Length: 434
Image (cartoon, rainbow, N blue to C red):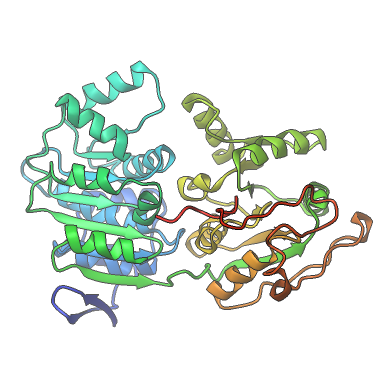
């Protein structure tokens, strides 16, 4: 048995562990047929724990790392509720931080509901006028589930195209990322349009105080489930190379030529680094493409589709991609830069080893980022093995993060460029305080 705590009632709720397959949830037979057709048989821990709570109509806070199957954890019981309903109307509103995540949730719903006749639409910005009109017509014609980014949903609300009167479920997916992106007021604005009597489900990879505050404001006596908070999946082989900046691209070239990888995801911390890395890797003869905000929506979708269909083996992006891509079979993640926040490391490397598979995550740690990487190791509770840089790339810096704390005010490798003083200012790698 496992425990799911209820903040509102201050007690524990015991649930059985007899659930071995999706057949054990007593789903509608047509939903089970869809799962069988997609090859889904054994639920993940977050699904085992969340689905009974949602079927029981209770509010829920679920904290689970990326790649644990949390989308299916809320989509499946909601689909079961819809297909068993006598009357059809707008049943569910799902809010997601990025258009990519909204699209992927929509795609999963389409797959799960193949035999159900349940309709859904993803509502997001960044498209042309035709996209807006298509979204508007779909909502006016009636749809069961809306998956939306906050800004675009508010724009549609202002147009008066959505009737929320019969909404039964509200889902906030990647809630921590939405708050990081400044969507708190937008979320509250949307919730004011919804019926007070509803089931609210909040899914988040982390549970900082601001998420607790939001949950206390919008949920009623929620059950709470925590799955491996802030810990990478066990199937991820984590490694690090301590390097100088000028060695990074040659190291990528060496790693990818040393071993054949089917699907590689490379993260850089800025859009400028992503674009530069794209150009330089292609110069080295590596077939890579970048995704960033300078591409229009059609271009971004085309690159993601190529990567998902294995027509493209190397994809480069920023941290937005760490939450917005759901691709099976990514066998290598490379952190070209140490992520600016320890939690971002979890999300980046969580793109591999998804749903009990295995994968490799390699981080390049330059002389100035050692202290940041040490904070990551403190968060995950273990030291990441440091691999020796190939001798042909020349000497590399030693890993001594305890001495780097005093060097972050501008000292570094002799080729790192002009020294800067950050006294009294926010360093470029730091996020602004909320």
